[in-house]
Each structure stands twice: as C-alpha cells, then as structure tokens.
Length: 148
Image (cartoon, rainbow, N blue to C red; front, side, top):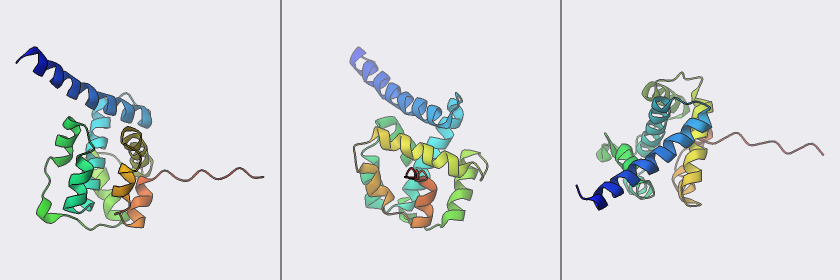
C-alpha cells in the first residue's frame, strides 16, 4: 500500500474514532465497545425506518467507515420498516445490548452527537420522516423555560 493510500485509510479510521469518542462522552463512559454498539444500532434503526432514497441521502452525509456500518445488513427491499415506539425501543435495546429502560437516555445522546457532526439540517430531514412517537425517543427532552 502506498503512503498516500495508508494516510487516506488512517484518516477514515481517525474520523470514525472521533465519532465514537463523542458518543462515549455523550454517554458518560469510556467503553468504546458500548459506544460502537449504540452508534451502530442508532444508525440501523434510523436507516430501516427511512425510505430507500432518504436512507441513501442520509448515508451520503456519513464518514466513509460509518457509512459501511450504516449499510451493513441492510435489505432495501424491506424499507421502510414500520414500527412504533415500543417496537423501536425493544429493537434498539436488543441490538445494542442495553436495557429498554436505558434507551430513552441513550438514543437522544447519540442523536445529539450525530447532529453535531453533520451539516445543519441534514439530520432533521431524516428525523422528519419518523412517526412522532418514535422521534420522541430519539430527541432530547425539551428544556423548560425558566420561571419568570
């Protein structure tokens, strides 16, 4: 492998590591295996709920290595998969190997991490396609306005 190709490959790995570190920090853990499982699950559960065109458009915004993670195991002929909040939470918990009680804390943390690493509006276009009950799992709870 030429030095140029090695440097490009190292850059791809470095970018993925930046995302994993950010997910780890958002979760308050140093467990990179957990961060990887949670990010992979978040990407898969979003991808599977989108139309094929929307899923491909969203993937184009991802770093190269994470794009591979995103597409891993995808069956476009089954997209979009329809599921409600409960099914989403159960699938997320099962795939990420976390409790269903942890999903409402974990999923929004990953959402905010992804939002911080994409161009403004990119994530919103994908999230706008989700049913409200599923989107509420992915979005952080609104901060109440201070009492005046």
